[in-house]
Amino acid sequence: MPSQPKRKQLSHDRIVEVAARAIRRTGYRGVGVADIMKEAGLTHGGFYAHFESRDALLVEAMQRASHDSRLALEQAVERRMAKGGTRFEALVWAYLHDSNIEASEQGCVVAALASEMTRQEDAVREEARSRVRELLALVESALPPGGGSAQAAVVAATLIGALQLARTLGGKAGRDLLAATRQSLIQNHGAVREA
Amino acid sequence: MPSQPKRKQLSHDRIVEVAARAIRRTGYRGVGVADIMKEAGLTHGGFYAHFESRDALLVEAMQRASHDSRLALEQAVERRMAKGGTRFEALVWAYLHDSNIEASEQGCVVAALASEMTRQEDAVREEARSRVRELLALVESALPPGGGSAQAAVVAATLIGALQLARTLGGKAGRDLLAATRQSLIQNHGAVREA
DNA sequence: TGTACATCAGTGAACGCGCGTTCACTGATGTAC
DNA sequence: TGTACATCAGTGAACGCGCGTTCACTGATGTAC
Image 1: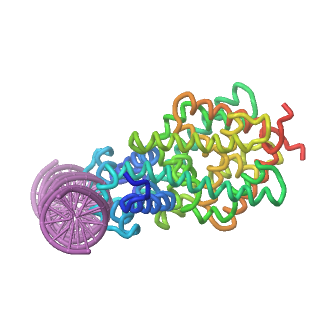
Image 2: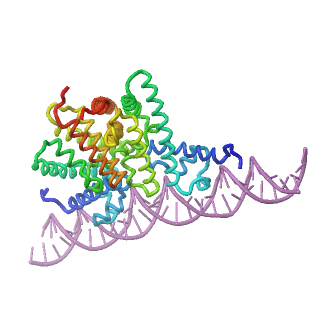
Image 3: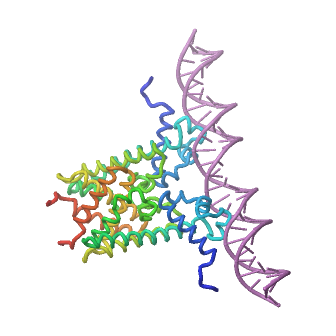
């Protein structure tokens, strides 16, 4: 059993990577077996040598999308913190950056799929719950000291809701909505509560 | 031209009403021509005597869903205000009530469809924008004096985001998320800003 | 080093099903005289 | 008031297409000796 990545594994990764982008751009329904395989440079017949079903691909695609967007987000947060400011402020700016209105393909998988999550089959739905929990943990880890899971829940809800509304409105209205949300989040959750 | 509702109009209304519920329960894709007609007590062949296309039905269904849920929400707000509290507090409680985790069929159409809105054809997408603008206006009208459209945007984003996350998580985790969001919204937006 | 065979990854045609859309037809309602 | 005809709302079969899934087959890679 050699440890180097085998040919099949490389194809598998490519398929999942393509699907991870497609699922955020076009939703669960937008991930078609034939299209994904084609974009990965393969024919659709070989799909079931890689996955038990289309739903199995959706599960892997969500994991991959979550992993990739998390890395990108953390890098954006680090870049922003280098210019000064708290981790929470940097998170808000990175997550609600104007460029994310268009770039759903590389963005947060929860924001891209939230209203569709409850309508999936069991395996996909359970994976969706895991993605939500991960987002909640990520937000909580960036809150100022004293912020607990309750505060993380509100902030996460605001982040994904704002991105969705901004994407639907588009244009200046969308950017204005993001700006208002950034300001409000930083003002209300950026410092320890004066409880 | 008689002013009484004709037979065809009654059928039309029934179809739209059924679709208005289905679109919130199962999303855009869940609204199938045959299923909707069947639930309205008709056969699918007659569909195109009522609508130019399936998308035309989606547009009317969104309008109807928005109208119906707005009425229900305003009634819930009035009932809650009768027990005391501000209009804003009543709105937060009505919109983020635990019962709305399950009852998506009668709930806010924006929360039910938000992440799918950007993926629709032009006519449906434009109608979706209108539904978002209406939600923003509704929230703004319930804000305490001094709250402008920027504050309404943040609150609306938080409302729809929290409902979606609560629905995905479900159970106690979902209810806890709603409770945390209610408390935070009322604390941060329930009174005039001490700017 | 070379030959024979087994395994593996991927191909491409085909199947079954659901769904949006079309259309010829039917039965009921309304109108003309 | 009654008969003949036109209009209207809805029926049900059919079409075309896309999509998830299956499967016999091919060409390349790896192994045995």
